[in-house]
Amino acid sequence: MIEPALILASASPRRLDLLRQIGVEPLLCLPADLDETPAKGELPRAHALRLAVEKAQTVFARPEVTQSDRAFLVLAADTVVAVGRRILPKAETEAEARACLKLLSGRAHRVYTALVLIARDGTKRTRVVETRVSVKHLAREDIETYIASGEWQGKAGGYAIQGYAARFVSSLSGSYSGVVGLPLYETAHLLRAAGLHPKIGTA
Image 1 (cartoon, rainbow, N blue to C red):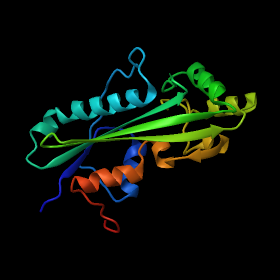
Image 2: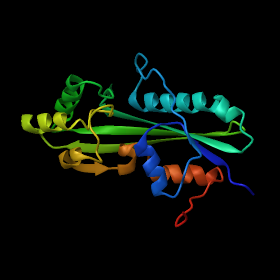
Image 3: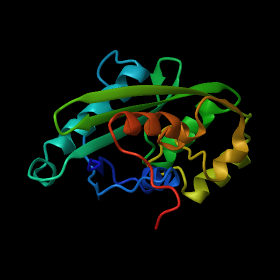
Image 4: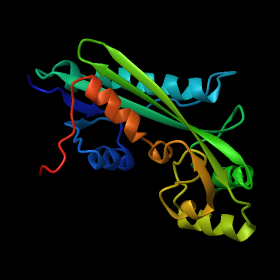
């Protein structure tokens, strides 16, 4: 039986690297440009899942996918950082990043990463992974040094745990890879269930 080809509904180099870490190489990486503004009253978990579903459906409908002769799977993910019910932005300016870091300083927050996998026949599988992250008290120097690094640009909550900001994280309960952007245990489970298996040790 021929395995389905994987199409990653993302242009994120982090998500691609994470997939490769578990022996999965997508056939295509196709970003889905969406308005990611939360709906009025939308909670963080629901927001992450809605965006992941919309990303997957958007890419699923693209000509590169619909006109393919191959069996395929479309994988999408969305990561949301939240303090209580408050959804933090994907920081685009220094002011946004600084506000996020000040809010996260000295407290715990939650990171939700939603996964959606759609097969060619329209079968849809979903998961939402929740991780609790605690951040040490950030001095002004900590924040300004991090702002100067530029790592925060486009990152949910204004930080990248896989970079310099790792020194700020005092504890983590859940999926580290989920905070980076793709929870690998859950991703591997979804892919196996859909008939796609990793190629460990192959070129």
